[in-house]
Image (cartoon, rainbow, N blue to C red; front, top):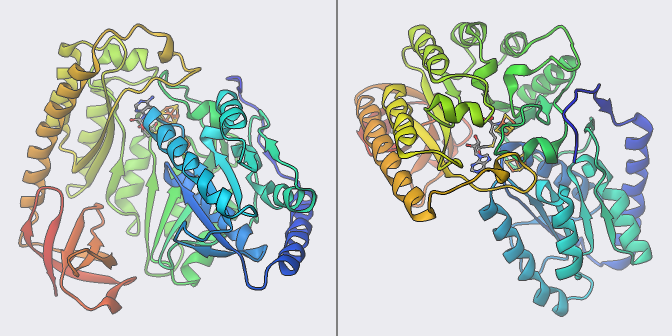
Length: 473
Ligand code: SAH
Ligand code: SF4
Ligand code: F3S
């Protein structure tokens, strides 16, 4: 596992990317010989948008190698699970799904099973896969996703299993092919890794040190997306507020937002995740003044108790958090704030948990992702005494959800009668069009499918707790 110190990020050398392009061609020729029609590849990504973005690059490389991407597992010639390690539940799901592939593989001996992503970056997991799931062909860590063509070539040409999990500080691989899942919403990573080592979190161990992409490349990619017709660009990083610190490009996150905002075109900019310790008034002022930046701030607070925040190693206080929100709401009265919170951190008392509830009541989040603490091997919190039972934590969890539900319902009710500019995204189960407001609240309304991928004015006619109903103007 990586150590804490900062290091200069290493770009994957141009020659290495070129070498992978050659492997793409080699795999292509093997596939052309072996298959009458393009083999089917099923890729599933778990976890955060950063991982989804990696998944789009893995898909891009598979496509270039001659695979046809499919949505159905049945009949796939290649299955790739891009995994997440954030909580135990995420890992259990992967083990379950990999186990289920065994019978598929006995029916189709040529089927290839590949595992990558954050979970695989952990040595104890890789060992368990080797021991208990010997039918898996290729396992690789988060720092070598650009080497997928080489791994496949070795496996297809020599029949050898591959397992490559280098323990690196992290690299940046530019210029990989990408298969975007949507043609109007795009993920745009601005940085990788994390240096914060919140005591409960596995991310810094599996994603390496924080490293920012060159702003010139980010702006160029954003321009290209806008030219291709993308309507929403989401900038990604575990802590976007420290963008540009390592290496120092002379461009902080606010400046990056301003540069992307200056690109001509009709599109909106989102970003996540912001860390309260690095969130500045400058960022909030920039959000307020940049017309293309959605007035939505995802600002995880994790706990309302200063003692718990301290042992979580979050490095801000409840007061600082509420001050940031106060400033943000004063600059952007319509701002929608969402957050993440952990219930039942080791040693948290009921009184401390109640401080989380009162913070939620004060903060007026539009929605919140609530998690019960999950112990992650190798983290500091995994060694802390954790006396509160799972049942008790479950009761706290429901108490918190009830508090948030009441607030969310009030918020959505206050939107009835108003008109919002909405990006139309998909068709709901009930046959309505589903879109999102700038504040990231889902709104459903009757309309023709042809509106998907465009901005429309929608008037809110009804509020359910978390979502809105409306009509096209
Ligand atoms: N970089 C982001 C969070 C990424 S992980 C940030 O710092 O805000 C997404 C969320 O998962 C976290 O905000 C946290 O609420 C939750 N999480 C992370 N590790 C967890 C753990 N061990 N148990 C429960 N929830 C966890
Ligand atoms: Fe995890 Fe904290 Fe980094 Fe977020 S900031 S990824 S919670 S260590
Ligand atoms: Fe999961 Fe890795 Fe993201 S642990 S949340 S996929 S960075």
